[in-house]
Image (cartoon, rainbow, N blue to C red; front, side, top):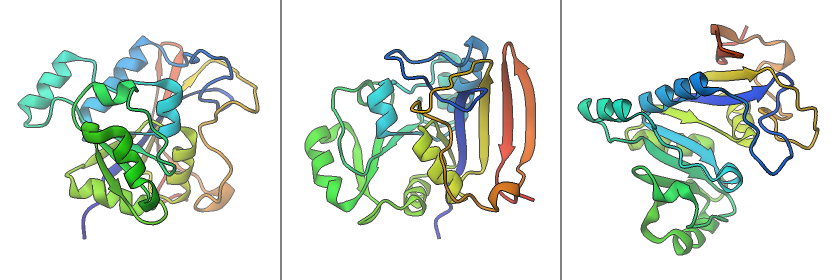
Length: 226
């Protein structure tokens, strides 16, 4: 059986749990030193994953920005950039997004019915793989394991974080908590309502807590909750 990657969920959120507000501009939750921390985790990962909604909304390049870290990856026998992965059920992607035109290899994980649609849109910009008639996270992680992904960094959005936490597939959670309050019910949240393992009384283990200027960084281990 193929080993699944070690899954790290990474997010910056407000004190009241939001990933963004409802304004047209992206809400800057983190700060420069914390962005550098995120860049380090990216450099240590074999793949970085975002959902199609996040890609459409934020249009990120999703790169390791530090030249020194990229050089170290190459010195370690790795590609300069981690594999970039997105997941889509609908297949509604645009070939114009920055994700496809920066960095190294790209992979789309989707469902049987959307494969041809994605191939027609992207051509040779990415590998396209179906993980079944309905999207299956376990099969998706097994596909990444077959591709040599030992650590997967998941950068959102909230729907994907929720699905992986509810399926008990997250090995670590990295949260950068910004000293902001959003208070907009329609804005995106880090986690939504779901049936989480262990229920509301199961406590996660805290691995690390530290201040990064005005942001508080917390690492949790969600598995084996007490």
